[in-house]
Amino acid sequence: MKSFLKEGKLEAPMIASILQKEKPNQVEQFKIPQNRISKYFPKGTPKKKMEDTIVSALEMYQKRQRNKDMER
Image (cartoon, rainbow, N blue to C red):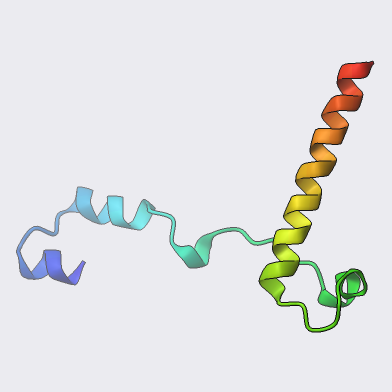
């Protein structure tokens, strides 16, 4: 906004547009306490690896559920 202000281009519609954009710190987060999931991973596993593994497991679970629903 500072650069637009310096250029004289800062107007109400532009301000509204900037304020409506989703900021990285405004993305909704879902947190699971590490003590609840650490028993499923080797000690020292990086958090990113844990997250990727959990997402992969959920994707497999979802596919399995869809296959069960199709069998019915």
